[in-house]
Amino acid sequence: GQSLEQPSEVTAVEGAIVQINCTYQTSGFYGLSWYQQHDGGAPTFLSYNALDGLEETGRFSSFLSRSDSYGYLLLQELQMKDSASYFCAVRAPPNRDDKIIFGKGTRLHILP
Amino acid sequence: KAGVTQTPRYLIKTRGQQVTLSCSPISGHRSVSWYQQTPGQGLQFLFEYFSETQRNKGNFPGRFSGRQFSNSRSEMNVSTLELGDSALYLCASSLVKTSDYNEQFFGPGTRLTVL
Image 1: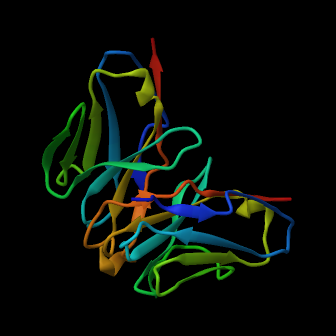
Image 2 (image 1 turned 135 degrees about the vertical axis):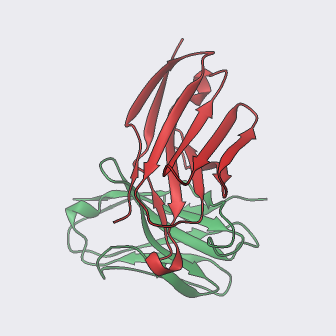
């Protein structure tokens, strides 16, 4: 089967760094994406890792290791506005339904 | 540039009825995907349309269907509504097929409540 596992909730302090992990049991995929969704809002694209390694975009970084079936989103200098749900997603290959699979999301709580 | 729009934003129906939801993608985007979001199951893929053709479909019953028009606008239909269909239905557009380009732009969603 194909599934993505993320922690359901993570709590961190304003100004700190937090890492949200995503492990997958998907045999073959086209890369790992991350989306952010605030309460009542639509998911917005954060990053995409097509290859192994670290991608950095401002305060956010995303990492992928295909050999470990693992990726993470790193948020630095946390701000209260970063309180949201974060979803990882992979694209299954054409021989496996060719569709995007989302994790169930990690709710990030930020304490002042 | 206007974002993805979805209508209606809120909908209340009763069991057994049918419903049609509409999605207008970002101008120039040719791919539209639909997702169902519920607290317990997260985001689940329904189907993707590209150039008026359904490219793939998620694991949903045949009561869920969709189509895409020549202007890339898309509709999804759910027939014989069940209580479990209550969810937020999200539409996402992308410039090309999602297998060619990964970033999707989501609309605000339609909140469907089935009584």
